[in-house]
Structures are given as structure tokens and as C-alpha cells.
Image 1 (cartoon, rainbow, N blue to C red):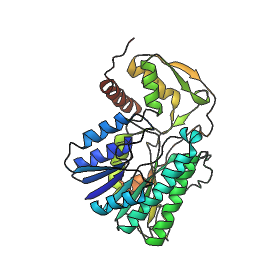
Image 2: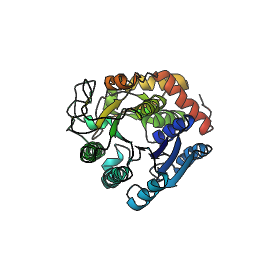
Image 3: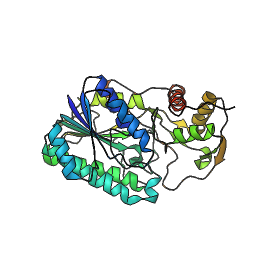
Image 4: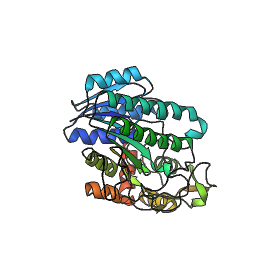
Amino acid sequence: MKIFITGSAGFIGFHLANKLLKEGMIIHGYDAMNNYYDVSLKKDRHGILSKNSNFTTTKGILEDYEKLNKTVKQFLPDVIIHLAAQAGVLYSLENPRAYINSNIIGTFNVMEVAKKHNVKHLLMASTSSVYGANNSMPFNENDKADTQLTIYAATKKANESMAHSYSHLWKLPITMFRFFTVYGPYGRPDMALFRFVDAIIKDKPIDIYNQGEMYRDFTYVDDLVHAINLLIDKIPKINLVDNDNSLNIAPYRVINIGNSDKVKLLDFIDEIEKILGKKAIRNYMPLQKGDVPATWADCSLLQQLTGYAPNTSINHGVKKFIDWYKSYYKVEIKY
């Protein structure tokens, strides 16, 4: 199978491409290689993937429709998995226009090329942030999600609406993933686990928001990409029944991918300290603008469709990340 992955040099895109290559898939990656964070990390991810002869790549931005269309036309994929986006909840407060350009215009271009080249299945990343101010948990795909709290979340909810319309109009099968706090090796430097580990090792304070009263459904990246792999062949069809949230008018599905566990942030930090053998310098702060105190996924639909449920423990996942961090950055812990 030929699969086109946007954001292939990104954290999740890299892990997914790596897994699919091991499964014998032919992968073409498309990535802007922008400087939102350290480009060398992105280059290293692509370097690992490029060791496999079934991996090719194009550098380009999603907003460049002509380049994106030309690349897809030449590769002619069976499936497109769209993971590229302007990420980061906090950065959306500083530079909201970047999210409109990449997440709205870019995603529209991806849907256009998927339609034009008759892909069998378009799978796209959304986020648990679309649940916004919802406080009934665990979050279920059928819950109303109209109270997004940041432009980042709003663009992702817009992507879901855009996708549903294209799925209905052109009978294009589309699956939208709502990811929940993904972590693991080769993670983004702006994400909590990376920032915490980096600061603790360097004897710098860590900022803990909402005075530590934060809960997240931490999802290990290997579990996430395994779930995506299983969903590639689960192509939505019109008139699905039972507990599926697809409507009768479009081959479209929204699906949560999380660990189905609400973990207190302070317990997560305790685990990091235990594995590092070193205490954090804790700086307790109020809840950040646009942030939510808790997320928690109901993944019963994922389990119903695939028979699989992510289940990696925090202890195992955090240890894997710390082992990678120490190896990649060649650091020793100073006690």
C-alpha cells in the first residue's frame, strides 16, 4: 500500500511512518521543516526514515497547493494521513494567523488533492482540545463540542466540519482522530514531558499550572500509531449503525485515541522525579489562558472497531522518553 503522510518529520508523523515502513508500506512524506522548534530534531527523524528505501520525501508547505498537488499526483497514494499542522496551544495565543494559514488553508488543500486523486481513505489529525469547556468526562465522540477555548482548538474543530462537508459532497471516506496528550521518544521540545525532564536535569524550575490541579489522558506514541495503523483499513461507510458516531449522510468518522485514564499532573511529575532520581524545582502558577484543567478519553469506539485499546503505563512511557533523551542529548544526570 502507498501512503502519503503530511508532517512526516514531526513527532507523530515520524513514529507513524517508521511503523508503517516496518509493515512493508511505501511512504512518501511531506513536511515544511519549519523552525517552530529545533529543525535538527526533524532532520534526524527524517534521517532515520530515509534509511528505508521505501521512504521518499518532499519539503513543502501545505499552503502551496500547486506543489502539494504535484507531489500527490506523482506518488498516487492509496491513503493520505494528514498530521501536519501548526501545533501548540500556547503559541496560538502569540501567533494565531499561523494556525489559520496552516490548519485551515493547508487542510483544505489536503482535502482537495485527496478528492482530485481519488484516495481510498483520508485520515486527519484533530485534537482533544476541541472538547474545550466540556466538563462531563470521559469525553465521548458524540458529546457536543462547540466551546473551543483557543484558536488552535477552533481550527481543529473547523477541520472536522470541513471534512464532514467534503465527505458528504464527494463521498470521500474521512476519519478524524482526536488525540489526547501524546508523549514519547523524539517528542516535541515544547511539550510538557520534554520541558520537565530538560529543566529537572539542568536544575531549572518547572512551571506547574492551576496550582497542580491538572489532569491529562497521557497517551504513549507507540500506542497511538498502532491505533492509527489499525484504522487505515476501517474505512467509514454511509449508514453505519450501533455506537458509531458517523452520520447517515457521509462516510465520515470522528474517533478518540487516548489511554482512557485521567492522570493527575503532580503524579506524572512524581514519576519523572522517581525515574530521574532527582527532585524538580516546582513553580506553582494559576491556570493558563485557554487551558483546561482536565482531559479524559472514552475510547470505546476505537476498541469496538479495532479490538485495541492503548494501555502503556506512565512509568513505562516516561522511562522510555528519559532513556531516549539521555541518549540523544548525551547527558548524564548530576545528583
